[in-house]
Image (cartoon, rainbow, N blue to C red; front, side, top):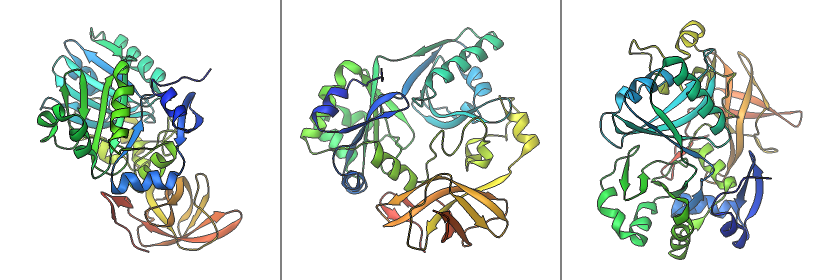
Amino acid sequence: MLKTTPLNAVHRASGARMVDFGGWDMPVNYGSQIEEHHAVRRDVGLFDVSHMRVVDFEGRGVRDFLRHALANDVAKLKTPGKALYSCMLTEQGGVIDDLIVYYFSEEHFRMVVNAGTADKDIAWLASLRGQSGSGISIKPRPDLAIVAVQGPNARAKLWQVFPDTRAATADLVPFSAVMVGNWMIARTGYTGEDGFEVALPATEVVAFWQALVAAGARPAGLGARDTLRLEAAMNLYGQDMDELVSPLDAGLAWTVDLKSPRKFVGREALEVNGQGTEFLGLLLLDAGGVLRAHQKVRTAKGEGEITSGTFSPTLGKSIALARMPRGTAPGEKVHVIVRDKPLAALVVKAPFVRHGKILVNP
């Protein structure tokens, strides 16, 4: 049996095409994936991301526990509501998951982890707690649903429909959150556009969703979510990195804090192994194919491989993220093997699109 979110019946009633996504019955689109993509870039779209798991960490010593568990340093979180993107690593330096952690008080941090890794993540964190002797509590929150309201008009739309949220969120800076009653409203997302991610009681999410749709927000599925995040060069766990891939080889060195002397899980392996590959964008120059994961990339310095690829609705061209040999640089031309045929592509510095603006040129 597939797992379902509290919005499952709403998606089905809306005519969504549903797929098995890591054991969850999720909408891939509601008709036109391209139109859903453009709605988020140009106006406002809604995503059900209730398959992701909220986990609360409470008790004395939470900050010290997370400083050891995560590759980024939660010591940076000093203002209540501030958020931090981080990887959680194995002792060998591979990525167990990428996640966002929020600081609310010295005795309360909150984490949002990926759906497919949630059980593994919680078990890993519990094992670290056991090893450290920490007395903190680790509380998964299956009672909460999450909806991402994304696009240049997303914040205005939320305020229009739920005016009581405006005062608390109008001055919210990116990568921070605030509690409005029992809703956590975070200025975060996975699209490269502005907006909010709202974690709220599962019992309230149907009314929340339907009110926003009635006001003109467009439901968007996993298909548009993938093209949007790839244009924004946001990594997808399981494709761009996993337990066999270092964050240094997945374009995530900026999320690893090696400046402070703290010991964190995986640090020693990262310092010993260093960076082995370049992680860069590709823009297809030749016609005749679409860039996809696992296609081989021929460069002047050896062979690489695409980790994520798609057709970009905003650019009207095929784009990809790829791991390539050290020394490969933006501006170089390479060839991608598409159906046994080498097609020319340009190496670019990602992202491709942010806040509706195209950032790369062929």
